[in-house]
Image (cartoon, helix red, strand yellow):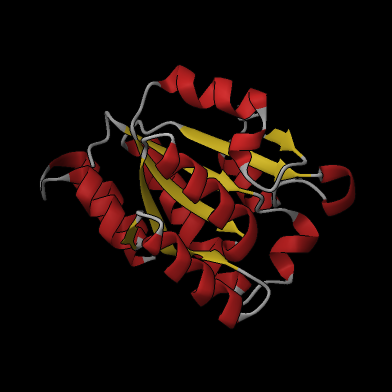
Amino acid sequence: MTSKETLLLIIDVQGRLAQGVFQPAVLETNIIKLVRACRILEVPILVTEQYPKGLGHTIDSLRELLPDSVPVEKLSFSCCGNAEFMRQLRSFNHNDILVAGIETHVCVYQTAVDLVEFGYNVHLVTDAVSSRTEENKLLGIRCIEKAGASLTSTEMAVFELLRVAEGERFKAISKIIKE
């Protein structure tokens, strides 16, 4: 992965849903780290919301970090089932997709499988996804990997995008990771 070829996809980290998942604080912390690092590295970020009328909007801590981002609203579990999502995804012309969000065994799984089938290199950030139960989270991760995605972690992905341990970007990202 390189910062010039990668996009961060944050799937459905919304109010009620985000509070009801396995280890919600870990999920939120790691997605915030990803967003902050991607902004430093100029990696574009795409956000989705599943039926926000019923599930609420993206959690405040993420919305504050992404003030100019307008989430793609969807009803299909797979983000790829939404024409506007596909239009925006293709407009970035990036082939590596870092995937984070919820729920691992439903929307994240179906999206990752579709992205792999469309020829994208999918990198599932395993400590930045969750489901209501740990069992469903782990099952989703296994099935996503079996479908052809690579597994990574927040720290692993960020340092892979960074590439070198020098300069202001390294200092800023090291501070983010240590928090």
